[in-house]
Image (cartoon, rainbow, N blue to C red):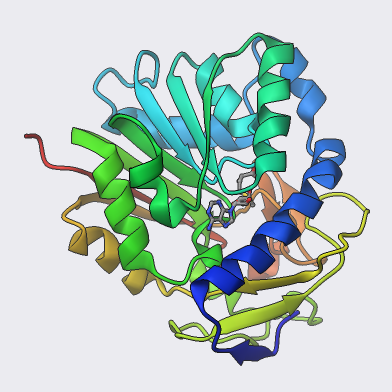
Length: 283
Ligand SMILES: C[S@@+](CC[C@H](N)C(=O)[O-])C[C@H]1O[C@@H](n2cnc3c(N)ncnc32)[C@H](O)[C@@H]1O
């Protein structure tokens, strides 16, 4: 829960966030359904959903054979699913623990990927090469203060004609009080220079607690997200707003076919996630 905002420079905020994410790694290794990947045909639910949405925008309807850069890849469950779907994948994250965990999982499953440790806002300089698809999803840009800088990394990583894909929590959902008895607005929708301060020992998956409980996040309205991509020179191909989300955002949410949704009587009232597909102009 965050009811305060503070002015903080990016290097300090990033370091606080990085420590918080390092602490989450062992908890998520336990709580994510990692062992499901032991089935050689298994892809995570997130990747199954996203590949279906992406297919009409890919040259042959598949990521097979494509060079993919997965930004903010965490412990690699989605990254390795993309490898399993036939792509050559580079996973990018600023948490060394998350990347070690991802690499270990890849070795165990016999799935090869390249792992790059960097702040996503410096990804263009840290990652080698250009990509047919830059992919990021589910818990990403809320950790970043500057979407113009983020979008310019995405643009720089793409090949001419390459595709960008994001699916993430809808900014309208992030305005909702997750603990209220009914749908109630609590947090600012519009972009704010200051960071939202979160002090939370628990994480969204599993029961354990983190020692570094402080983190900083930033609200980004849908207009800011779309305009950052347009500003970086990308062409927006599609925008969708969805009624389910892969994690239980509020204790009042109920399980649905592809994640969690509000109870049926509230499902039409507020979107849960958005999807944006964009393209870099062909050379
Ligand atoms: C919620 S996870 C998203 C990944 C994916 N949806 C999953 O659940 O596996 C967020 C990831 O973003 C990473 N992250 C946060 N801020 C970052 C930054 N500035 N640069 C690079 N990675 C960052 C964290 O380390 C974490 O692995």
